[in-house]
Image (cartoon, helix red, strand yellow):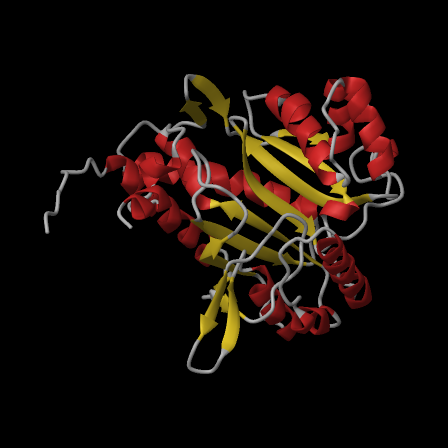
Length: 353
């Protein structure tokens, strides 16, 4: 058997190592508890577009599912009173292909802040990203600056970042009222009028995603990071609803929208945050709706997390976010390929299988 060894240039791979160290120190310095969350779960939250990978414990004949995020485990501890906490975890998602910005297993940071909402955690996000970048520059013995150069584009990480509601962006770039396109029939009609191919599409999400990617995501400002607030409730089953007139804009009404944001840097989605839902009954209804949707459309299904529903009965007001560590490291390493910051990307593993 012949093994071929290649001398690696480790510098870009070390970027992720330094980023993780900086993140851990940031939260430990602020009194957050770090939690090691399980990878193997017997029940997982049922969320739109998140599909689990399944494995089996042969000794006991039990099916397990690889965690899609550390969320459910952290929330159970929050319900027990752990307080502010974070986790750096490996997570897995099926029905997603590998590519320049996605690996089959990837690293996620998730943290929770008690007594706060998604606007509060947006400020923490700004501070964390800037702090991590400046610590990285110090580690690399480079000049300290708030300006990140990514693929020739200067990005100013200084707070405050751009803030928009999703509805504002749909009005501006897609010339459509998203609040009137939250059902399948309406969005099919709108998509047809825009020239999209709707043949064979019987659900709402694929057309929403096409319009968002083609007309919104590609037009986001790149001079600073961008927060997009207030997402459709049907995509946000673990979030509180928006206030009557929305938290940022009169166009962001509570009917059909929830307190969630995603944030982008250099045109790449990096994280996803909520004001957390605290109503167990609503959470269970949302899981059951997703279960029915998947059965109706022959989509992969797994047992939804009944223990999380029980925990939600004791859940305090709080906010949480999941942040893609690999993608953040890509930005800091100035690369468009996730393989440049991973020692063992999935693509190399399957080439050798």
